[in-house]
Length: 180
Image (spheres, helix red, strand yellow):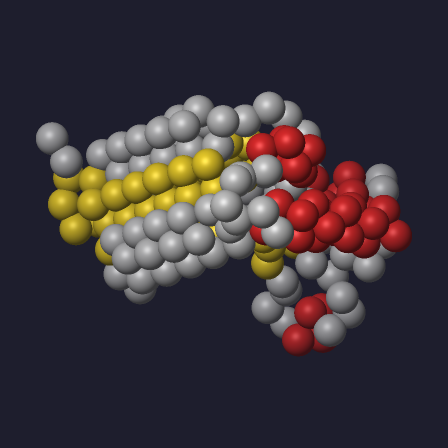
């Protein structure tokens, strides 16, 4: 398997692989171009970055690792400062609203320092259902699923799956109440 195939399969991989470095450089260049036009959003560049058509409205600045692992549903809106570390798939449903300074990260590293220092990385996919609202400063960690119709309160750190139709807040993020 190539390092990219290992990465996409959720296996340990070497991010210094030439193909992966080139893909990240491409994404960084496209993010820079997108962020350089804050008055009129550059939909063509966003579509080139994601590799597909989108009606997403993402306020600059926006940053990601690759772009090709991000799938945004219809009517996606993100305020300033969205960061998506899309080492693996980030699937986001329709009508999702993201407040400023949110980090969605599939990337992770080994816990043992010897393994971590070897340069190996890993990732776990993230899924966010439709009709979700993510508050300011939220961090969504690797492997998490956020259920449809849920609101994540500002400043939360989402470390585990959150069910459908609820309000969840805190560090670690916990369900505060179910919605009708």
